[in-house]
Length: 193
Image 1: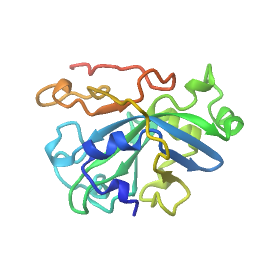
Image 2: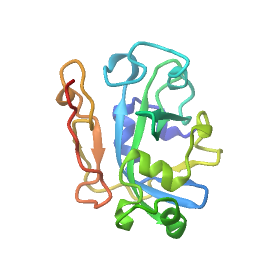
Image 3: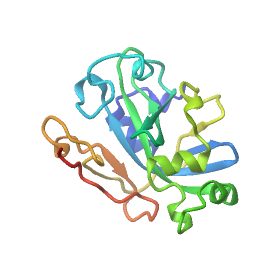
Image 4: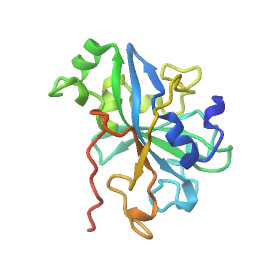
């Protein structure tokens, strides 16, 4: 297990910024993440407790939680907190720092290199992350996470993208990013139905 992931998602998430996610010939420097705190967080998949889909969020820190979003996109989260306590960090965006040509071939619709891993689904495509990676260990698996050698000087925080729930998204300012980085995805407020 990576010691960096031992705490609550809200504490761990900003510490992942600047870290490297490596896998399948591409390395991404993380520039944006979102924290989800399980059963105490109405925006979390695990808010209603363990289910077959969310059981992994209650598991070992350093595990990759991968899911299908809106029936069309794969998104990846890092499980953190002690086992038995659901908590995960959505990997929202990053800068491709190695394997640029391979990332470009996977993301042919990108308009710029800054766009290659801007957004959680794009990040997964750039790295080649699929649903088959669910449960992989980020210390020893095909996708690995290295803590930042040089953490960013500044970290910004605000409401999570597209999340609503009890108290509104403003009650959970658990989206963290490196201010001014061109790979950070644009903020989108939740839309009430």
